[in-house]
Image 1 (spheres, rainbow, N blue to C red):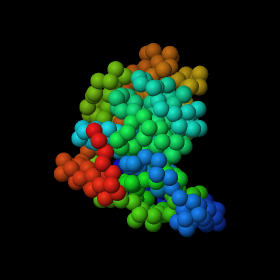
Image 2: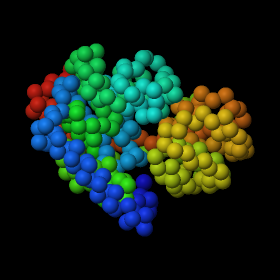
Image 3: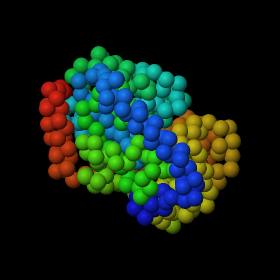
Image 4: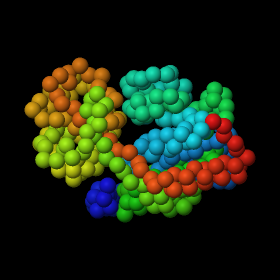
Length: 331
């Protein structure tokens, strides 16, 4: 996504200035929470010998899940035993931490992101739930010698992490919530082991596929009138990307992030004479509906791509950081 478009989404306005006192209170609350651990009043728990966190400082839409998927693929290809930890936001399984069963996951029970991740990484064990310490304990007990890879959780201080990779989209508004998009002060990026966007400059490769999984060139969108149904953190990023590829949106529904997409009338007004473009995260929920007959569904997604030398450099650094802590993961 271009910097110009990112900046247009996070440009400060009158409301942001009005909310600055609330932002100051939020900042103070975060620093107070953090101080409890910095002063040694509480200590993060070493619940797993090798914990890698892919996190962010802003709210949603920074690419954590695609990057976590890429990193899991890279580590697995190099012989590591990898276990994923996801929050399962908004699902019944998010309350504690549970080892997910094998096979396709119901997003209504496990959450849309775990269901999506399972579709990409069917053989990688996954623990779902917000209690990250418990998730780490489950992974350590059930999969000794593994690397625990957290999708999000950088702000979860009770769990000791060995290596932190941060997805910072570089917005010009550097305020904490609610005036800005930051969940913790923006300057904290300097504490991360790797700032992925700035230090490694990953390329986002856009993909398009049909409901049967077959890939289609994104050139297919050029000149077409399409419908768009999106329930992600930054839906206008999807619209912008689709229109940059030459498509013209003539009907659109933008819903809240993690919306279950189960409303009976959700597809009532969707035109049947043009393709319906959805994100991969939304498709794992929509594919269970029985009222898609007559609608040509196209799934829009993106993957990260790095030069091979950057892949090797990152994995080498991970090895070095973990070895410095006396950790020797096994494949």
